[in-house]
Image (cartoon, rainbow, N blue to C red; front, side, top):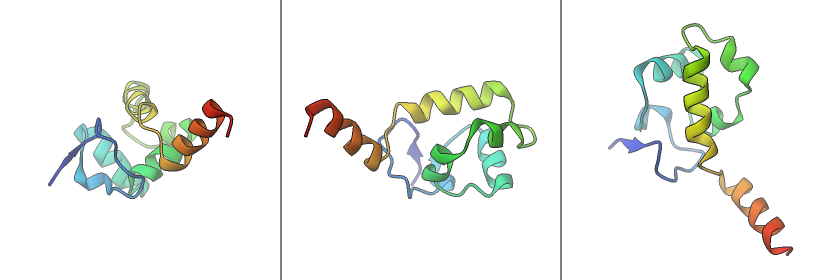
Length: 84
């Protein structure tokens, strides 16, 4: 079963189980990034050092991942919003 990156995926979801452009999937595999959490935590500097992963691919990936908060980030954001 494949998942869309647009669904609310937990950080431990394997990259190989997510519908991604081939270039991004191959680059993640080359860099040893195995989970969605790995992708979320990877810096732009690290992404820039991965062969065949250009700025357009990084921008697209960042846009997709920024729409999805990890559980810890979502919890932190909810706490700040409610003041609790």
